Image 1 (spheres, rainbow, N blue to C red):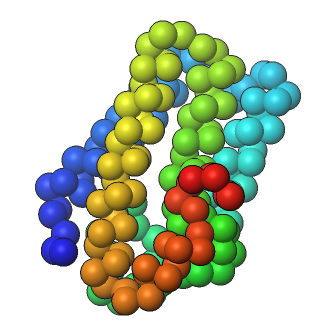
Image 2: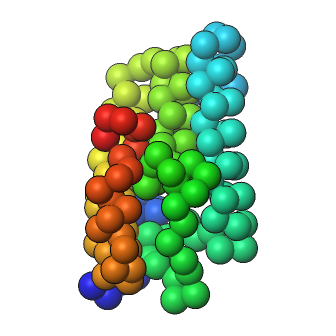
Length: 147
């Protein structure tokens, strides 16, 4: 499966557009301690995933890098897409902190966009790495032990 650059950039543009819209439609830092803890957990998970992959190898695009490698340690032991989980967790904290119909709709669009993006990325990863099927069998996509 060859990467489709237009699709890759489109999915990322939607993702960042939604995140910007969430930031512009309510507070970015939760005042509720539970939602603030969710935001902090999202940042910690995202940073852990980035450091595990190595910052110079991180790409916001779902395309598989020719010089990349299949990472199966750190948060990737439990999740195939911990950075997507971090984005969704952080966005959910923002919506729960200042809920509105618009913000819930934005969150749903973000979730759908990221699901499309991860399915697309998994197709590319499976084509690049023969061991990806085994990795998929032993890890969940976004939620440990569930999905």
